Length: 268
Length: 268
Image (cartoon, rainbow over all chains, first blue to last red; front, side, top):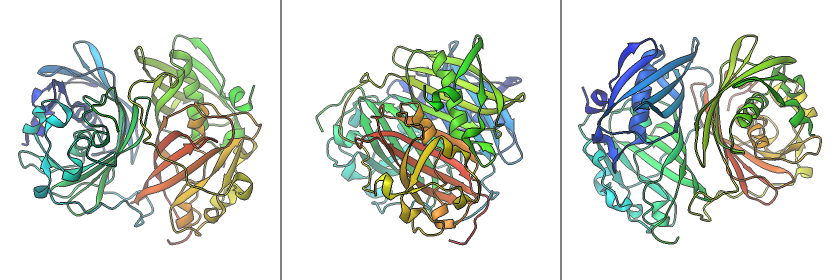
């Protein structure tokens, strides 16, 4: 069992009611990483539907999570279809909802229609060993999640205020050597530094209001390559679009989030 | 009152329970347009929260809607914060849920943090009068929605099988001359032909499983310019990303949808 699999485990305690534990090893600063909380909720959703792969997952972050504390997850299946199941989940801690999740599941091994070669290809960037490990200093925070995830940043973009583009590229894998699966891609889309920090300098905590992830293919073993760009940053509200590719260069997930950029360390 | 405003009107019949009517004038083929159904649900959500602008709206289309029939919308406010309200809605007809919506509302006139000039700019395309009106023939269907929306397509891309890129560009406005507002942008992101049809030829009905729209700014009066591209079309599942700009060139909305491409008229 991988650490991830163990630490997102949930137990069903009643019809549609699951319980888990929020481990502080997945913190960014003193708060649980949002992708980790989403993974807990998705584990409960997966247990409640018959299709294996999350193909569209949207979460709204209502309140920060509480590390080293239990969580309750209420699941409601909205439609159980032949090829797609749709369900929602509410993750609560200390009696208050923290995440609301709306998701569709299907089987990515089964074709639903037309195939084409239209896709997004990865850029050529230096390999993981030529990139630098993510260091919380760029955001001015500790990142305990380093014990769980090995995140490497393309060095040209890894220093705050050192990039022309509001873009973060790099690589990610589990620190314990376990291989990625479709569900771990949800986590991987929300564990890189905020992409505006290359332009703005230290940006502190960028709270995510909402994150949507589309899993496109089950990933091959090995490193996942990632690229995140800020599309639009206006009046403190940021849209960041992400792509993940597996070790064969196949697009495995796309993401988009609405985040808040409350402060910046230096002018652009 | 605009036709749109009249035809998405809802009446509150109990706490969190609204009713409306699905008008067949918004059909694509014999089914209500998804963006129109979403607009009905969003009207009910707007009535239930205090913030005026939908800033993040995700809908899962569970079943097709029924034209010329009433609808029920159940709304649950998940969190009413100082700057953001989050709520969900279920739109049902004939006793079955058709749409599930999860949305955040805020006030786009109030800045939440850092401002930058990072944005997506519109491409230069021929003006509306040099574009061609959307014709259902390209999809092999009637589009009664033409009575409500004036959709113009960039002619280089308007003929099926005639484009190198899986891209649709053009312009949109209400046919009755009423001006766009923040909420009408949700509708506008889901009323162009599917972007793969330029590459694939006639693609028929492309059912949307899920659509997420981020409204970025309140639009200025005038035409809205739109661009939709297919990012990835694999095993019948398509990710389409859209941008809308107002008449001043400001990015007013971004969209992304997961759709199914069940058939194509000619090989790519």
